[in-house]
Amino acid sequence: LSPTQPGKIAVHSSLLGHAGGVTSIFFGPMEDTVATLSMDNSLRLWDVDTGGLLQVFTDTCAFEAGAFVPLRQELLVAVNARGLLRVIDTTTGATVQRLRLSVGARALAFDATGEYLFA
Image (cartoon, rainbow, N blue to C red; front, side, top):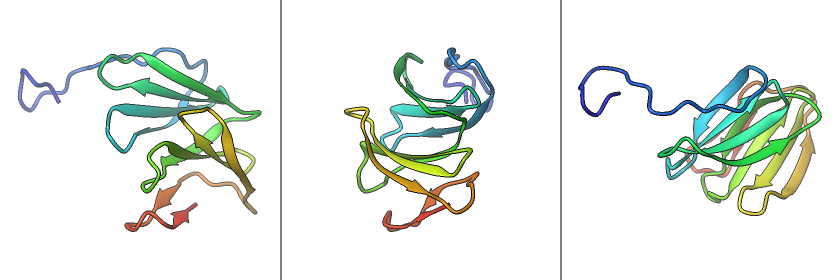
């Protein structure tokens, strides 16, 4: 919403860089970062204030869903179109865990405790 015109929607930033359609967008735990997942096989992290690109992670196929880990704010979980779930450390860019799901997932969510991930 527009800070200068209450009740009106305004464009804050255009996040330019994906070569394919965006499949998911979500804020980081501190709401200073936004993540976008795309059909171009990339996951991108952006600075909320400036719209500047912070990091790019790529895969062999499209990312379909993602979520930041509530208890470890530097970790992000993302799943690709083939059901490969990755836990990514956003400070180092390293994949710290991989898990093959028996079926693909189009949504990821943690429970209120932050301990359980639902796909």
